[in-house]
Amino acid sequence: MPYSHAPGPVASEPPTGPADIRLIVTDMDGTLLDDEKKAPADLWRVLALLRERGVHFAPASGRQYATLAADFAEVAGAAEGMAFIAENGAYVVRDGQELSSDPLDPAVVVRVTEAVRELAADGVDLGAVVCGKRSAYVERSDEPFVAEVARYYLRHRVVEDVTAVDDDILKIALFDFGSAEESTAPALAPFARTHQVVVSGEHWVDVLNRTAHKGAALRRLQQELGVTPAQTMVFGDYLNDLQMLDAADWSFAMANAHPEVVRRARHLAPSNNDDGVLRTITRVLGL
Image (tube, rainbow, N blue to C red; front, side, top):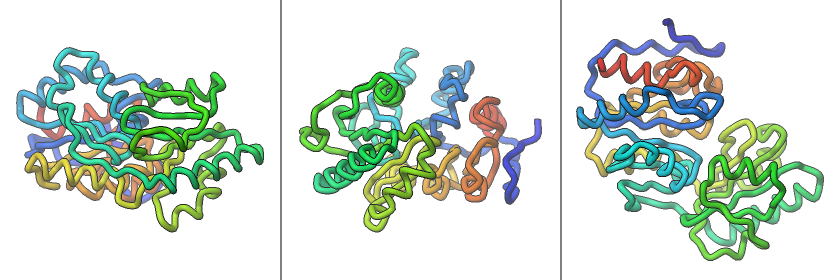
């Protein structure tokens, strides 16, 4: 089936394998997972084949490490030795051991939280998720908001004051029930002078250190594994994946990707609803 994508510059279709790929890194939501948040039915079989070939596979997501580890622990042995790029690159863990982290200054956590409280007081329907190494913390406790948080943060707690928790804070994720790109992100523009303010989904905006992103995390993982960009394949669909695409020669935008991601990637993959990640892996590696 031909590769297709949203209007914009046309990236090339990749050659048929096998290719010398040693590391595969994929975003989760909108990329590996379909719109129902389900993994491809053939995922575990493909992961077993990759393991047999000595190819490392690493999820890279805005989700917390505990959530990612639980997702891949559903099949016995699937997560053994696996690396996880969590919290949009602010936390990298391999086989249960931290490789890198990039916590926010506590003073920044206070300022962003105060800005979110002011937005909520002005009528914006949003809430903050303060993402620590041990747990995620929220002040808003209504069921619709907590349900959205629970989808991405297995470990989460409702607390009276998120700025008073005893944890290393890796990022602040803001969930906007409207359009994050149109309302919450512009309101946080002052923080973009010193930090990253990244639209990571239709309803999500993340605030991180300038040095914390999926690209930096991937380069740290490449260093750990002794893998080059030429041996690295990555998949992404949204703006928080851009730096990661730059760290791999085999960079793929999904057919459903944001137009800027399509422009940045070297190649195109079928959509997340068409098992685009697995179909591309199978094609390029000749599985």
